[in-house]
Image (cartoon, rainbow, N blue to C red; front, side, top):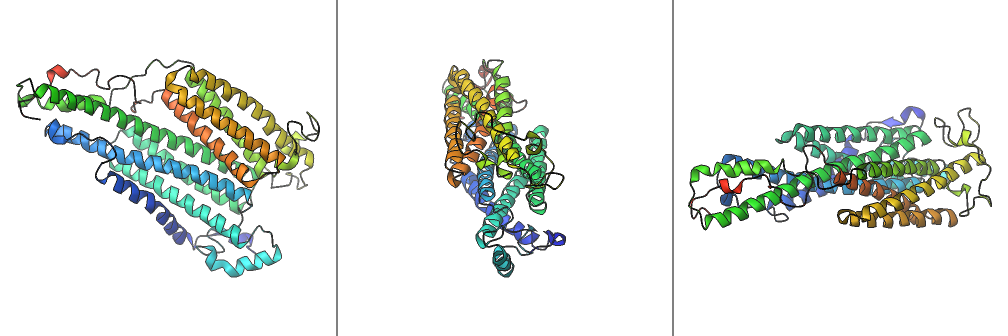
Length: 457
């Protein structure tokens, strides 16, 4: 087995980093191929807009923001997948499949640690160390490293471009946060699944989802607004060139029009209370996720085996003091005593009672959002996801934690966070990153002042 002195072994760090780079290489190659010819999004012909230097810079920035948009979207998707695979790793008790960090018994993969794994499995055939669990844990680390490489790429790309300072700061915050998240992943192993650390690791993953969702939404809004404005400009110039003579000296006004695109996009009739409701819903869902993580990491799922009653009672015997003592080892109190069953019941039943509150609020929020056509799809997604949470949550209790339902329960909770964050971004404008609006993005542009010589288009 691994001794306490060898819990951290940096020898295989380069190998693990290389595996992470290989994981990230696929998405990076896809983004490069997708944006190489810009065939997925409308891009106006630069000659149609003239040869002004400012216009060229606008179009170059649009192309780079399209790449950043795709990269941020696929990173968000893979982060969501990573969170689900993390739940799978925890639910299969594979968190200590390789009981050192970052490698497996000092090797870059379980293949090089066959002898050590065989020895550990001979002592304890069901784990925590087995060949299958070792591979599950290492695949999780490879995926996590791959996401880290993608976020590092986003940060470096953003800093290297002529983007607003706020955007560069946001990308660096995401990079810093994923480094903190990696540290908690290491502590999860070296501190032997310490419940508070595992729960904080889960919280870190949720916060990373929120940060990436905000970042991707901001790029989507900027690109959509800019493309809409460019189409308006091109359409106007095409119409004007057939009737007006104009003068080429006014061509620079096209660039002035384009520069206003990035500043367009005022809010449209959003009800002032919607952001507060969405923030409240997001906080409630995050709290419920943390309680769910506390249930899972303390193995309290089976403390109640019936629904809606628990142990044939509406208020079973519970020990909240032990159950919610935060800083303690797994299965023990801070005094070193075994945690009792009443404490596990308190953990489970608190999660269930809070679920009633979250269910009621999200359902009511859906009804409020559905009154606005703009949020109708969002409301339907909230209802669908909260229904999934109810079904998978009850099945976890009645069928004693089936793996598929438990993983889906975690995925549904993460999806709720993303949907609520998207709704919040829709309801509340972000300075410097306008969101798509109804009407024309170039409503403040004086098209009559843009003249072209005949035949320019």
